Length: 190
Image (tube, rainbow, N blue to C red; front, side, top):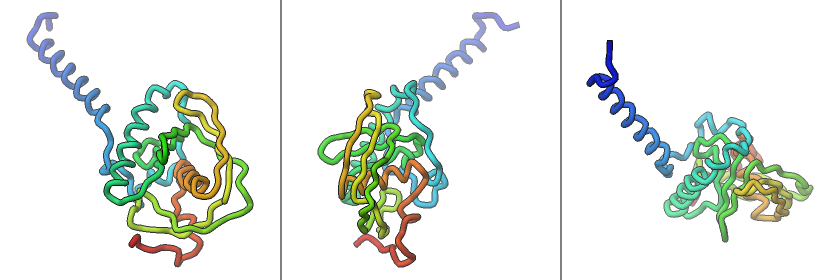
C-alpha cells in the first residue's frame, strides 16, 4: 500500500504539476505565420461553428493571434487587411480586421448584398503568391457582435465590402479559388 508520504506520490505529484504548467504555457504561446493554414489544408474547407457567449473570454487570445499573424504577413508579403479565425485553425465564426483601427466581428451575418457586382484580383494569406479573379457584390450590410458581445451593424461598399465577403467565405469553408470567374482567372503575384 502506498502511503500519503511515499516518494512515489511525491514524484507523481511533481510530474503532474510540471505537466499542467507546461500545458498552460503551451496554450498561451502566440500563433505565428507558421501556424497559418495553407491552400489544400482540409480545415480551410470546413464550416465554422458560432462563438458561444461562454467563449467570450477566449476571444481576446484568438484576436491577439490573428493580429500577430496578420502583422507577420504584412511584413513578409506587403498585404493583409483582415483575417478569419479558421485560417489559424480556430474553427469559429470570427473575423479580425485592422485597417485604421482593429475591429472584431463575432458571428457575422451578411445581408443586403447589392445586385451590382465588380471584378477584382483577390489575394489570400493562405496562398500568398496566388491572385484569383473573382466577382464580388459592390455593397452589403454586416451584422455582428463586437468583442463586448454588443450587436453591431455596418453598411459597407467597394473595397471593404469585398474584403468582408472574402473573410466571410472563409467561415463557410469557401476560398476565393472556388469563386474564380473561369479557369484563366489565376495568376502569380508579381
